[in-house]
Length: 137
Image (cartoon, rainbow, N blue to C red; front, side):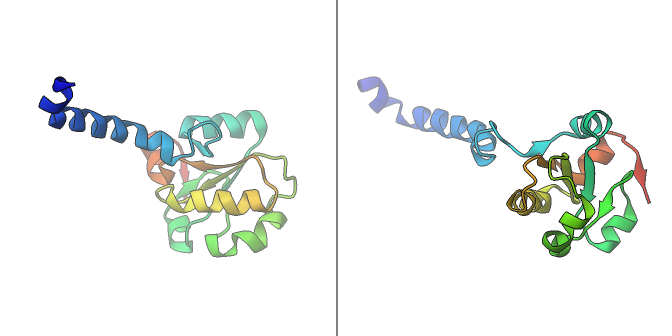
């Protein structure tokens, strides 16, 4: 017991660093059903499962560059127009924005509409470009 009392600061540092290491897994819901995918996984989904990529950024972001073949549905219009753009709700849908933050909200909207295979591109277009994958303008 004296070890804990004598080294309380060291223990506090160890616990806080462990908590910081665990934060990403906890913030994404434990990782078990996390809706995020990497750029490489998006390519596999597009090639193997005919996934539909939906860019939810603004018109200026879409014009600046987007995933090849992506459909453009701004986040504000997603709930109203997604069912018209992707008719089969069993089709994998990958939602993309500039950084990956808005697309996480878009996944919640898509799942509410019945698209259980909706996923977000982790890191957004920044991660797509960093992976040197093709961009269409």
